[in-house]
Image (cartoon, rainbow, N blue to C red; front, side, top):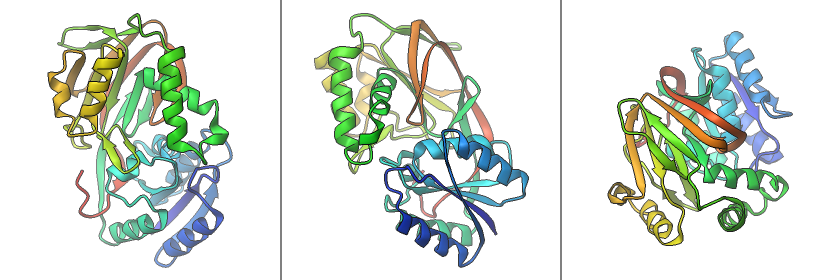
Length: 309
């Protein structure tokens, strides 16, 4: 097979040695070209050019943001996307069942390729941009923005940095006294007092160390989107909500401060002023309106065998 290996050299877990080992392993059975990203959005252009050139699979060694960019370049083509975790959290690769170690994940990828384990999946889109696993609107996007302002620390203090940013944003930088936006799902009552919404194409929402942060167990690549909205960020209900997400996540459905919508194909977000949003872990700015859609049969994806999702 003809492969393009896209490497993000700035990703948290990418090393020069690891890149060489992975490229050699892929080249043992395939024709491999290697390209490095140099700036934000570069992976989209590299992936789109590879698809136009007849490449069979684009392999991404990087984090969730680089994967998202490549997916946007491959959407609507027959060229498949494959993930090798090289970021700080690697939500999508781990959700697929890949090991978090990039060398081990390469072995699983080669096994999948040898058995033709490729499937078409649906993606979500937000204001025309595709996402693989989720879009966060409101509080979590404000946290991601705070982390990105200190991006130089991310490689060395990933989980600690996110923890600090979440606490600092909650205490000082996100207004917890007023609602920030309305969530409108066709055919359902409007949620007009939203503080934080996540729209998921898969679950978990993220990982804390080795523990999945589960908010919508029904969200899988075989179904439309799930929408989870928090109506409060007050300390006591928020602690209860966080406790549930570190378990099965099912108790969230009985919490009066949480709103759920499953199998959603279209949702609109109307802000009461500019609202921050992040896509697959990358902050994309503050906007007053977001339109999210489920886009079926959009991307070919290499799936490790025996993956649970």
